[in-house]
Structure formats: structure tokens, C-alpha cells
Amino acid sequence: MERSAFNPDAAGSVPVSPPVAAASVPAAPAQGTPAQGTPAQDASVPAPPAPSHRDVRAAWEMSLRRKKLVRWLVSWLPHRLTILIRSLLRVEHLVTGKVKYRWRRSLQLRVVGTTLVISATMIAVLGFFLTEQIAYGLLTNAENSAKTQALDGLNTARAQPGLTPRPTPESAQQFMTGIAQKLQPQNSGSPNYYVVIGLNSERADQAGYSPWVTSVDPTATLPPALVQDVRQEQHAEKHHGTAETLLYYAPTALTLNSGGQTESAIAVGAPVGIWYQLYYVVPLAQEQQTLQLVQTTLIGVGIALVALLAAIASLVTRWVVLPVRHAARTAQRLAAGHLEERMPVGGVDDLGALATSFNEMADSLQEKLRELQELSKAQRQFVSDVSHELRTPMTTIRMAAEVLFESREQLDTASARSAELLAGQTERFEALLTDLLEISRHDANVATLDAEPADMCDIVRGSAADAQQLAERRGCRIEFRLPAEPCIAEVDRRRVERILRNLLANAVEHGEGRDVVVTVAADSDAVAVVVRDHGVGLRPGEEQLVFERFWRADPARARTTGGTGLGLAISLEDAHLHGGWLQAWGERGRGSVFRLTVPRVAGQPIAGSPLPLGPDEAEVVTSVLEADLAGGARG
Image (cartoon, rainbow, N blue to C red; front, side):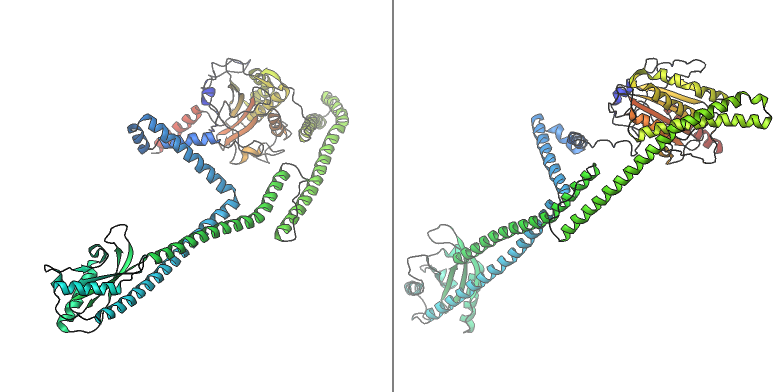
């Protein structure tokens, strides 16, 4: 059973009361509340409209509310905070949706965005490695410079008198102060290095000795590991008498005695004899400024390079995308019927060749379509002229056939039978001419609709006269399920009666002697008529083929009712002329269903049908019960 987006409340409010029995036709109980349906998907029925942004947002909010975590958070959060969070989520969802829409629709945006991401990543990686290499080089140069200065100072200190005697508090202070004044630069600005003179651990811990002579805070500036290495080296030199000069260095943070902000530095230390220690603290302010300048330059150059690459990618992509957009726009206008539309040719390159080829294709297409239109017009005119011109000789033949048919009792048996066949085939030939004229009017788009308000129930009952005679010969009956209230719609009575006569005649002919059920229902927008038979049914895919001209499910099957093969094709065109649907459903062995849906107001679009396209619920339940009983019997 098909379902549509039509309002279920409107469909459910259709009153269906006991049916009104037609003359000489037994009635059955009314069907329950009619279900809805949608048109079958074929080329003649427009596709349903795409969901709006409001529907998408409503679906998203509904899916968000169904999450357990969201419900739990809402139950604990204040109401106003919940409203604020929901508003923020709506804004985020709207922005994300717009970005995704633009990303999917714009090739230029995807190319430029991808180029930006890749180029920014590569420039960031290259800038990081370049910065690391420059920082490593600056640090290495600073370490080498600090070692050179420390080595020069160490040689100067070892050449001073008073190095080897055992120090007293006065001599130690005098020697350390003299060395510090000699080695420490006396410029007024910020010095390039700071000198720290210290005593060994044996004298530094004794009372009266000053352990350090320096302008920096040795406890905060000199790393303990560096001081420990220098003291061990001094201890080894004192006891083992090693003369090798070893320099120890470590990164540190320079802190002056006056306090203030610390800065990065390198500390280099070495023992001076067996009593004293010499340390050089070299600030890295110059190297940090150089590295910061390099980083700033790299960042600026990287941003400029990324912007330049994005501009180049946008320009190059625009050269390619614009002709493609022109081609797409031109193709859309061609599809809309503007066959004179052409692409501008801007050169002789590949894109110019594309535009030239596209224009040549459009010219060829326009020429072919003009030829086909002329051929189709000639064919329609030919069919119309032939059908019209055949009416005069056909009238003469029919009159002669009637004379022979009326005097058949005076003829021998073979001649009488020939007269009967001539009369029957003459009637069929005349009906075929009438249908050809009607189908030619639809093909030429000159068919007119004389719509007026009418009760569809009356039209259904009036259309069953011919089919009722055929049903009596077949031993079946036509069962009506009509609502008690009138189902008024603006229709062309002649065309709707022709549709229903074709449907009822086909249902009786292919119903295998079983009853035919006709159901009528209406809602606020449309009126539907369903003709249900229980005959041979339709194979998969034949739901659309039945409306093709001269199509027959079984070519070997004879037309017992003398049909022309154009009845359902004309019926489909009549339904479309009303702005409605004519659809079919069928299963092999379960019969078929034909549903006619027309709007209550002529020309008004309809979104659904008051009746389902398929067997009703009672038939489905019955078939399921029969299948269960059959399975239980086999078990």
C-alpha cells in the first residue's frame, strides 16, 4: 500500500457510510476509512518536491531529542539555559548546513579550500623544521662562543698570583674580587656575559669565607648539576693531579642579585686550581631576538604564500569552472526548450574546443528536434486527416452492412454469418477511428476540458451500464462501495465516463468470472475511484505498460469485447488533462487495481489519494489467514 505526505487527519475524516445500491446491482458494506496513496513513479507524474530547510531542521531537532543523553541533560539543566543551548545548536546546525551545501555545490570552493589546507600544512611543517634548524644553529654558536670566553678567562685566572697558596678569608676574598674585576666587562650597557667566582666546597662551608663573588644570584642561576660536576673535577685534580682542562656547561635562567625578570642563558664552569671555581653565564637574549625575528618573518611569508597560492588556485579554477558553469546553464536552458541557446567561445584551447563541440551538438540537436517535430506533426496530421476522411466511406460501409445485417434471414447460412461479421467489424472499425481522432487531439495538445461540478458517485453508476451487460454474460456482478454523501468534483463528465467505462470493461473481461468491486472516496482535495478485479492480475513492470498504445499482456488473447487497444492510453491522457492520476497495481493470480484520482477543483494540484493503490486491509488479512491455515494443514 502506498503512502504519501498528505495530511492523515484530512484523509481520516472522510465519512464513509453504508453504500447506496444502484439499480439491479447488489451492494456490499462500505469500506473502512480510506488510506492515502501517492502517484506511481513514471515519466508523466512529477516527482515530489524536495524537503524544505524547515522540514530538515525539524527532523534534526526530533532526532536530537530522541537521544538519551540529551533528554538527561535537559532534565537537569534550567529551562532558560536549555532554550539558550537549543538556540546555539540551531545556529551551529544552520551554519554547518550552509557550509556543507556550498562545499558540495561549488567545485571552485573545494579546490581552493583543499589547496589552502594542503599548502598551509606543508608551509607549517617546513617552517617548523626550518625554525628548529635555525634555533639549533644559534644555540650551537652561543655554546661555542661561551666556551671560548670561558677558556680565555680560565687561562687569565690561572696566570694570576695567589692561586696556589692555601686561602685565608681575606686572601680568598681579595683574589676572587680581583679575578672578577679583571674578567667582568665594565661597559655601561647590558654585558655580554657574567662572571661568577666561587670557593671549593671545603672552604665555602667554613665560617668567615665568602663562597661567591658575582653580580648574579648564584643559587638561582647556576644549575646544581653543573656545580656538582665542577666540584668533582676539582676534587679529582686535587687528589690525582690531573692537568687536563675540562669545561662543563648547561642551560639555565639568568637571575641578577637585584632581582627582576629572568632570561635564558648558558652557564659554563671549570675549576681554577684546587681552591677556586670559575663560571661564565652568557645570556641568550640576542639569539632569542634573532629567532623571534626569523619566526615572525617565516609566519608572515607563510601567510602571504598561502594567500598567494589560494588566489592562484582560485584564478586557475575559475578559468576551468566558468566554462563548465556556462555549459551547465546552457544545457539547462536547452532542456527547458530554449534550443537557440549557445555557449560563448573564448579561444582555441581545450575549453574553447569544449564550447565549440557543445554548440555543434546543440545545433545538431536543434536540427534533429526540428525534423522530429515536423515528422511528428506530419504524422499527427496524417492520422487526423485519414481518420477524418475515412468517416465518409465508413458511414457508407456501415449503412450497407446494416442493410445486409437486417436482411440476413433471407440469405444462406454462410452469407448470413458474413453479414454478422461485417456488421461487428464495421462497428469496431468506427470505434477505432473515433479513438484515433481523440488520441490525435491529445498528441496535438488541442484537447479541451469542459469541467463542471458533478457527483462522482452518479458518474460511476451511469458508466456501469455497458459493463453490466458484459458482466451478466460472464456470470459475475459489479459491486459498488459508495459513500452516502455526494463526492462533488469539477470534471468533464464525458471524459470521466469514458475512463470508467474502459476500466470496468477491462476489469470484467480480465476478471475470470469473479466479481468486480468499485470504491469511491473523497477528502478535502481529491476524489478517487478504485476498480478492483480478482482475475489474472499483472506481472511486475506491467503497471506502466498497460497504458501504452495497443499493448496487450497476452498477444494470443482475443479481444472479446472488441476493444481498439487505445482505451487505457486515452484514459490516461484524460486523467492528466484533469490534473489527476490514473494508476495500476497488480499481482499474478491476485487480480489488479486501477485507481483514478482527480482534484475537487479543476487544475488544483493534489498531494495524495483518498484510497490506497492495492488490495484493502481486509483482503490482506484474509490472504494472511489463508496462508497460515494452509501452512498449518501441511504441518
